[in-house]
Length: 210
Image 1 (cartoon, rainbow, N blue to C red):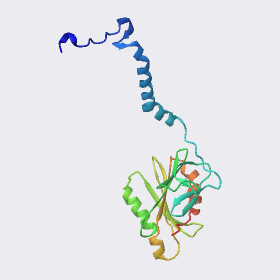
Image 2 (image 1 turned 120 degrees about the vertical axis):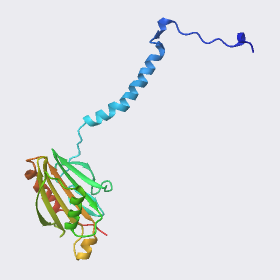
Image 3 (image 1 turned 90 degrees about the vertical axis):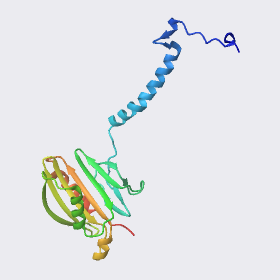
Image 4 (image 1 turned 90 degrees about the horizontal axis):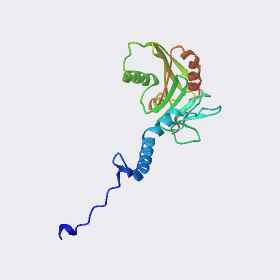
C-alpha cells in the first residue's frame, strides 16, 4: 500500500468550535462527569456529617448487650451504635451519647471476678498521671449481679468505670461468666448530673442466658 492510499485524518474542528483545546460539544458532558465525581468524593460525606444523628431512646427501650444480657436504656439519649431488644442482632458494643457525655457498654469473655476484670481494663489502658482515682464501691443489680464501680477525675473530664460478671450463683459460675464493661465519660462539671443515669442503668443489667 502506498502512502497516498492511507486514509486522511479527520479534519480538526475550526478554532471557533474549540475552547482550551477541547471541542465545545464535549465540554458539557465532561463537566457533568466531573461534577458527579466531585459529588461522590466530597459532597455526600460532607452532607452526612452536616445532618445531625437522631436516634433517641424512648421509655421502655431495652438494650441488647448480647448473649441474652440486657439493660434498660436511659431515656432521651442518642443510640449511636448497638441494638435494642427485638431489633437487629447485638453488635460488639452499645454507645449512647447526650451532649458531651458518652456511655459505652461492651460484653467480653473474662474468667475471674468483676474486680479482677476492672484491674485488667485499667492496666490495659495504662496510667494517667493527670487522673485522680476515687475509691471503689459495689452495686447489686435487680437481677442479683454484683458490679464494681470506680469514678475518676482529671482536667479533661470525669469518668465512671464499672465491671459486672453476667451471672449470679456460685463463685465458679460467676467467674466463668462473661463480663460487662460500662464506661461513662463526661466533660468537667457534668458528671454529677449523669452519674445517676449510669447507676440506674447498672441496676437494670440482667445476666446472660446459656
